[in-house]
Length: 182
Image (cartoon, rainbow, N blue to C red; front, side):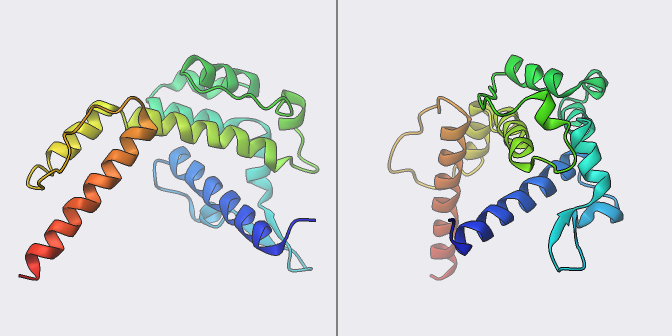
């Protein structure tokens, strides 16, 4: 049995991931009726709102998110398998064998773990598109007033690029705090 801390973390991850997806679907202008994607039933249990359940099961939210990320309406008419293939073509593989079209179209109950796999893949794709090594290097160079102890080496992938950016931004913040205190 999973402890309550694990369940709270899992619930928070699901909530944050769904809210992130909605921010991409609606270009950061989420409609009032889904700003809070969950509702509580009479037993005080939280559930995803029915319109969101159906939009996930139809792949509509995934298509809208991809369409907005790439500014391409051709993503708007894909089924789940088409979304998975689009992710694969962009270099993000969905390897979970339990994620199938049949599982993803279920609404009662919604297989949120399968949908989390798709949402996390879209998040990875977005990170790869936004945090390219060249973009990160350009951002770091704008922090050029920070003396670096080690030379900056071009990161190999988006994960290393993000880590490099975080580390250099923290260095810049420390430098700014240090210089403001003197």
